[in-house]
Image (cartoon, rainbow, N blue to C red):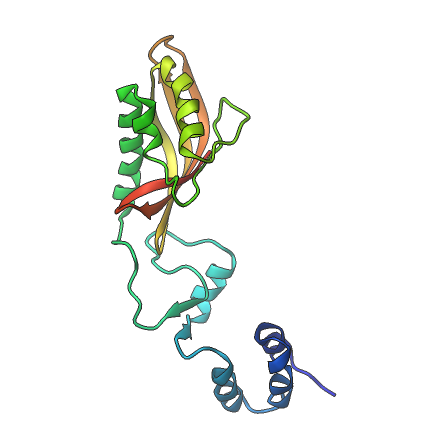
Length: 200
């Protein structure tokens, strides 16, 4: 029996109970296949166009892009407001201003600890994944009086998330030392504001 790769994909995606249905229409013309395929996919979803889905499969979104993933519910609205590249960059300033307060509680509140933030600090080998461990890290780090600036970065924006990655530099006010490091911030919308979900 000749089976198309499309039919095999449908069989795998649809589960075993749809396998026979997938093989039954594997030799039909494209229009008939699309009609049959639509009965397997939930009517509450629609496929994005081929160009977007290729990018989505790679797991990367370009600047200004608003959609992430292969499916989007019809008529659904983003659970967050749109965010621009300059607003994403200003989230670093909010975090840097929190550092300037010298209060580790204020800094730790910038992290999305309700949805599972991860801080992988540059000067510690211990992952921090909750409010108290993030605060603990900044209790020590803030004694150095750090102030950061972004030297270069790349911003990506998706539906409900934003990423800023590049090189930043810290001047330690307590010692005058200057430290340059790579960084990645992934932001999510939590408690009606953008917070850090991943930082390293």
